Amino acid sequence: MAANQNSSNPISYAFGHFGTSLETLLLMIKGILLEYSSTLQLVTSMDLSDNNLAGEIPAGMTDLLGLRFLNLSNNHLTGRIPKNIGNLRLLESIDLSRNQLRGEIPPSMSALTFLGYLNLSENNLTGKIPSSTQLQSFDISSYDGNHLCGPPLLEICSTDATTSGDHKNNENNEGDGLEVDWLWFYASMAFGFVVGFWVVMGPLLFNKSWRFRYFRILERLEYKIRNGHH
Image (cartoon, rainbow, N blue to C red; front, side):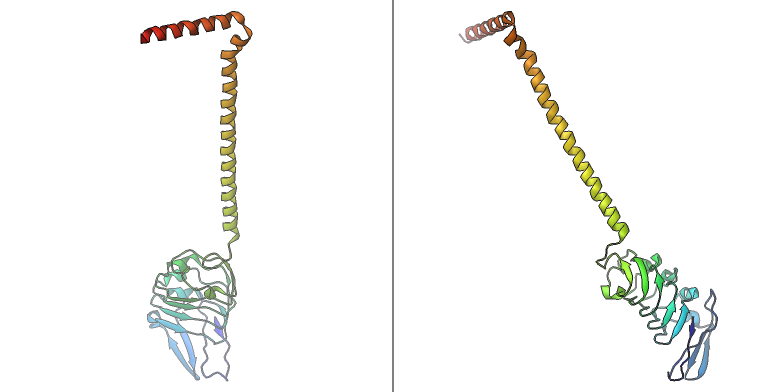
């Protein structure tokens, strides 16, 4: 990350090459070069907004474990948000708005439970907003000007839509299966009734001797019932 110095600005910033470890910070304030090294780990607030900073956010910045407030807004920063930004557990405020940051919001950001302010608007961020109590509690304006999806935004992620569609299809298929089962149940009942009816009544209708015996049995049964009551 580097700064384009502009003599018209009363304050400008200059950075050395950090590489993967952020150990030294050089600040050019009104022409005076200040260096922070051993005290850098004690920094709790960093506001480098509106300073024409370019390049990627140093991964070593996530080693500043005491950091509570970070503002890098309105610069020309590119690349991705450091994936280990969740290491900064004490962060209460992050403003990375109005840059050219790309890629997805790191899942580790969901671990920032103290976060009370977030602004990632006007970048080129994509993908689903990680699920957490904090990230879903911010106003949608915190994510404006990106290509993000998922709560708290109204845009549904394509994977969620596919999953939801598959779930509905499964429910429909299960419903269709139940309907088929019930149809077979009623059909078997009707078939059983018809078969049972003809098994009993068929011989009586078409066989005179069976019909005669059947009525004789009924007469005897009626006689016994009557005699039993007297």
